[in-house]
Length: 223
Image 1 (tube, rainbow, N blue to C red):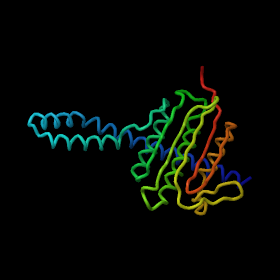
Image 2 (cartoon, rainbow, N blue to C red):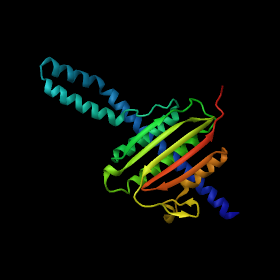
Image 3 (cartoon, rainbow, N blue to C red):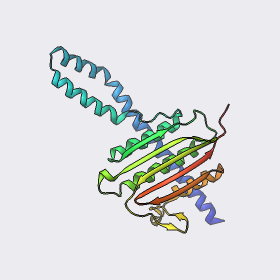
């Protein structure tokens, strides 16, 4: 009983830390976006000045710089669900900052019966684990994450596949976290708990330098 209570406390603390981490990442993303919007007038004035002086080559260079800057803070994915957008885009921004190629296609109902904190646990852990696995690859060109989210036969379907260098450790059919040897690894356990809570489906597979996770969560969206 004591061990169970101790584990429960650790899981609650882990979930709280996870939520705080995601909130900080999302706030940083929106702070960057607000900063770009604040500078918008200055950018327009600068470009008009180059244009009026006929300095077209410098104007072209300035435009290229703006495009690059905007890509760094742009909302990459618009799923239709605000919370999912926030988590996905903050993680995608983190991955690309680490020279990880990310492809994402996601469509999510605006309203979900799945609690936001539970969906955040699944998405956050899926993408954190994918980023961590990619960072074990020395060659940047070998790093990639592909994300697909949609509704499928009345369920929310999530699929994430990523590159990896080392074959993941397993105990029977169960995958072990790379952090478990250091006393962590609550992420995989929390994902399993959330999927079980909603009587969903979760499958993890690895093959030929890639790791894939597939999740199905039953939906009961408002009519």
